[in-house]
Image 1 (cartoon, one colour):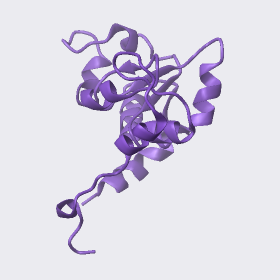
Image 2 (cartoon, helix red, strand yellow):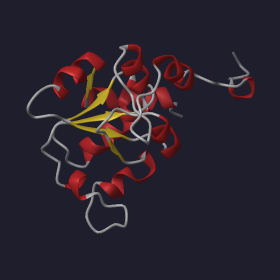
Image 3 (spheres, helix red, strand yellow):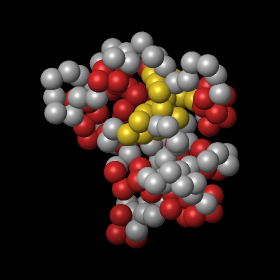
Length: 155
């Protein structure tokens, strides 16, 4: 049986990871990458990288293909464009980038450390209304919140 971490480790050889400072630099270039946020709707609404495209992980595969209710034309036609996939901590984005790689996306990467790392690097996040989110409030929101009943009892 494979664990979530096993799945991540299996996918990593096939994708690139970029750090927040790499993404910051890329966003200053003429040819900006498509920043694809694959978190859940409430996470995206609370805070995200300004200008990012939102496609929840649960519909990603259909959003990447024609002929579905979830089809996102800009994403379908971006198979040759540089794409940086973003999640909270940089693990869900690894799986999403790997899936996109399997679907023929040529230049897709995962943001290592995710939105949490972006905030730690003191880069701006905005809420759904476009207001900048306070860095300390973002840190609290993005912190791990694993409850005792979610912890492995064998440890």
